[in-house]
Length: 245
Image 1: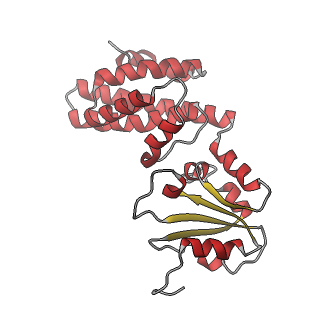
Image 2: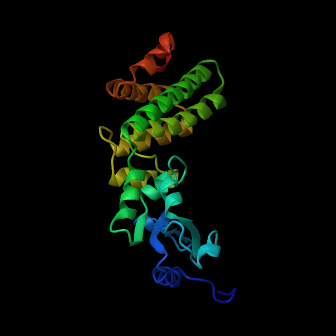
Image 3: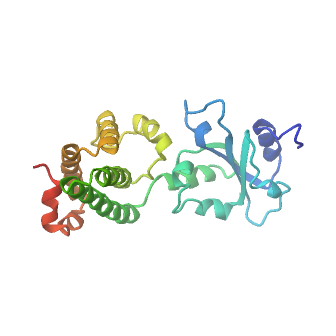
């Protein structure tokens, strides 16, 4: 590999596939999301090495070019990646290039794509409270004449709302870049994708109180159905400010 001849994705996959210490190759990012690549999209590749195995590829971990980004790590670290963490969604939708574990790499990715019941319930409760907090602040700021603060709080509330809705479905929330991609292919149960995205867009841009309240009514019903009534009831009389008038 030289400055004149940078390592290409195809060349590296061939090299890594020939290394018996490598038990998996996992491609994440735009190239793992059909229709999302551009001429500037690089290949983000995890190189999974058997625990305690030696490989000449280890020094390439952290390699970054316009064509190829590499992470070389042992199997145990790959199991833990994104659990929890920012990488979880990326790995949940990653594409397997090589799996020498008879489906073991696929099983690891499947586990990252699905929150367990207790984890999902706990996270949903936390995101619900954060959503209600930002929504309440937005409505109160709009009432008191703080227009910019109201819009900023409204935008914050959408972030927390999306985290909540995906947690209720036991899924990691996609990055903003892939939100529409995800929802078009894997809609959230009980939610119309077009309407949800339109509401998120409008609320983030305008802080519309009437739309925030209308959306909250649906969220409250869904949250109570999922067993999170106590989180909402802790808001007491302040709930009335969030609900449709």
